Image 1: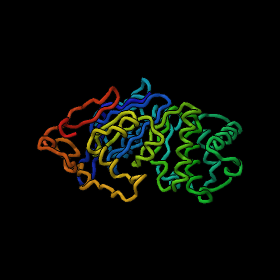
Image 2: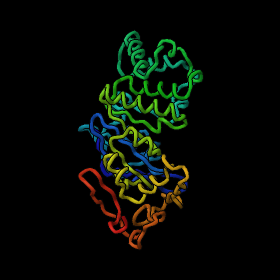
Image 3: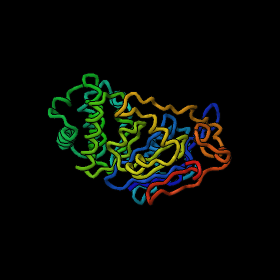
Image 4: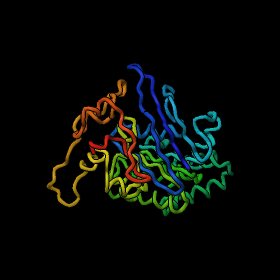
Length: 318
C-alpha cells in the first residue's frame, strides 16, 4: 500500500545544510501496523511528515519515491496532495492540545473536518461525527461534542484527535507518538483503540515512537532509525527476539527489566551525530561498543537475516 524508496531529505538552516534523511526505505501493507523507532533526532517524524508533504518550506527532497498504491506522492501537485491529506491518509499529531483549537468546541471541529473531507451535508456530517466518537469509546458523543479541549483529559483529547483523523475512514493513519505524556493505563487504552481501528476498518498505521514496549505490544513490523538512516527492520517478533544491529541491541538493553528490578540499565554513551557534517562509514560507529576501524571509513552493506529481516552492519561486528 505504501512504499518509501531511497528517501533523502535536507533542510537549509542558518547554520548550513542539514542532511536529515539518507536513503530511507520502508513499506506498509494493508491492515499492518509499522512502528518507526529511535532516539529523538533520528528522523522518525521527518520520514512520516514527508509522506503528506508537511515539512517546512526550507526542506528539500534530494531523492526518492513515496508510493501510495501506484501514485508517487512526491510528484503530484500541491492541489492533488490535498486529495490525500485527511481523506486517504489521516494524521495524529504528537500533542493533542496543540492539534485542537482551544477556542472551539470539539464537535464543531469534527464537523468542519468531516464536511471538508467528505463533502457531505451538515446533517450527514453530524451522524458521522457521532459514530466516529463512538468508535473511539465515547459513550456520550453528543455531550462530548459540546466540550472545549481544555475541559477534557489528555487521554480524551487524544481520542478526539484520533477520531478527527479517522472520520473519513482513511486507508493509512500516521500517528506521531500518540501516547507521549499519557500515563501507563491511558497509553494501553489508546494502543488497544488503534488495534481495534485496524481490525474494524482495515486501516494501516504508521506509528512513530521511541518506546520499544509500545512497539512490542502493537506492531506487526518495526523499522529502527538512527541519524536519518534505517539500521534494521523486519517483523517485530523477529527483530526484538533476534536483534542484529548493535544499535537495536543497545535500545533493548536500555529497557527496564520486567523481572529483576535490580538489573542496572545500560545507557548508550555518546550523542547523536551532527547532521551538518555526517560522519563517514556507519552512522552509529562513534557510539558502538563493537566498532572496528572499517566502521568509520566504509558504509556497511545490507545484510539479510531472513526474507523480511534486514540490517546494515559489518558481519564480524555483530
